[in-house]
Length: 304
Image (cartoon, rainbow, N blue to C red; front, top):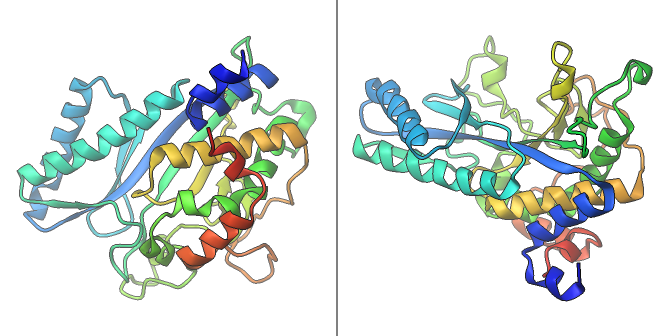
């Protein structure tokens, strides 16, 4: 491939090309998005959701799951894993449009804000990702020889994502209001006996762990289906530009594959706890912009 052809591609396409040509990997990815319904008849929510699923099916968009989330009238829809990042971006935007359009037909508004209610859990845009080689083998899959460790390739990718996380925050959380979600403060309107609902299940530190929803990069359990081992990037806001999110994530992945470094130890407890001395995520957009400006990796991948 010539430099001239490479420069004609989008930053996202450039990174997909680099990952495949330099390492022989294809990116398999899915998105899941959380949102709130506001106003209208709450009793109609199930009908609205059913109609959303029907519209998605008509558009050829495959849904992996839909579920009630922890906030009042908060829901989540997850798309199926595919090996076409651009299609996932396109379908994520279509998903948001369909949710909004169908809800409006019932007089219900939709919020994709990261923290629309002060004392309700925040909403996120989570990205699930793994890499496959030319033999269609998931290189994130654990081997018996790995013992308690992850596969080396997965660990390299995690390191890259953590190393570039702070300079990527402007893409994951592009609005000032988004930063209200990154807090360990409890949602006081939610009773203590419902701990999952009392917190935002959003990261506050540069961190990773296994089946741990307080970290930035989570490795879901795959003991029953080891071939589905993947990472879950839990940082982004639902109102972020999905193309910018994916480009920043792939930039971190490529950075990790190139440098082949090992990440810090997994966090097994509550990552909010002060005992885990990890860098804090920015608390404002202005702080995130300064981190992006001083960053040395991601901004180079964002340019054509």
